[in-house]
Length: 463
Ligand code: ADP
Ligand code: MG
Image (cartoon, rainbow, N blue to C red; front, side, top):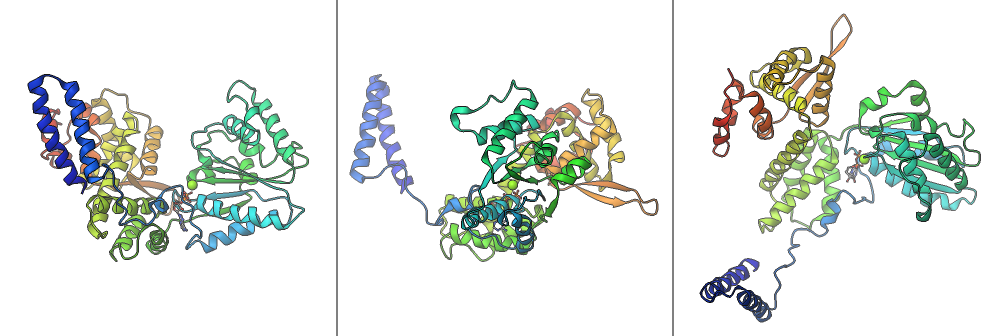
């Protein structure tokens, strides 16, 4: 219907455009054009927007901020988590809990789910005064920033402190004061705590009572990390206090993801709108990627959106495939755009080795290719350790894969790297580095396409 209306509108517009050219009076033309649109809309009593929710019952259920009523397939982890939280109900000193696992495996959802139950359930015990502070540490890189944010969370709006300018010890003093004033039991959740680069607060908070900084409040810290190495890199004294109870959230497999997607789809889509193959396919892709429920749910939403754009009454496998291509392209471009030039050079080096069937490959064997590329781009190659940091970053972004291997009898371990993504997608985001370094022989056949051929000829050939 919208299309039909648009055609009519343009028909009207074209006639008026002719009129305005002849008369040279565009102001008047604008007026008549608007009047024409108004008249048209009045006669058909229709705006230009129209509801098209034939597929979705509640699309918001697929969004990041939606909290499902129940979590599926996480019984074991939830049991361990609940046990770790039990001291709160018993009015005892709470445990410090540390959750870790990759992104999208339900750590935040499980925390919100259990803590909202805990908040309700403590109400039946009069001797418990329970307070909860939830802080996402994304964008906060220092203990100082975390401490000021916590102080401000605990203070009312009229009494906030500036985020700079105080000595750290004063901010900690304010924090202890605010926390002790609350009394009772306080749980402080530090979600995505791996963003924090110094561990002072991670040592101070769990030990605040032991160190005599708190007297009336019983405090417990829940640290949540998406990054495995964060936990391993903590100093032993921080680890022993912060990680009193550790709970690992493993990646989801395809069966888990199917259950999660089915639960979500029942809320989000009308009955019988999804073709039978849609959820298993989204789940299979999710399991293959990283066992990340967020990615699978995003794929289901993109799939639904594409079907809706198509004016299709049902969602099919073909919509999933298109949704996947669309998301993957976006993810790769975003990941690659955020890297430094050395990150690009390392990625380009690994890609060319992959196309020469040299992968999986160790970092010391990537190094000569990377150094060559760096020199061609007029940059000094980074030292091996820094080059390996770039490989780790690429792996964390899911652009390449890494496997830990044992050296054999000598007992050491080493890492092997491999490409995970299609060369075409990677290359389309590596334009700049191709310009700086030139086109390596191995990537040529992956570059020539209708849209890219012009750019390719402009690049220096690699000899
Ligand atoms: P993490 O914090 O580990 O990165 P989240 O808790 O944010 O992951 O989960 C990602 C998305 O997947 C959220 O939308 C969440 O509601 C959903 N989700 C994760 N695990 C489950 C589950 N077991 N049941 C239902 N939904 C889940
Ligand atoms: Mg999270």
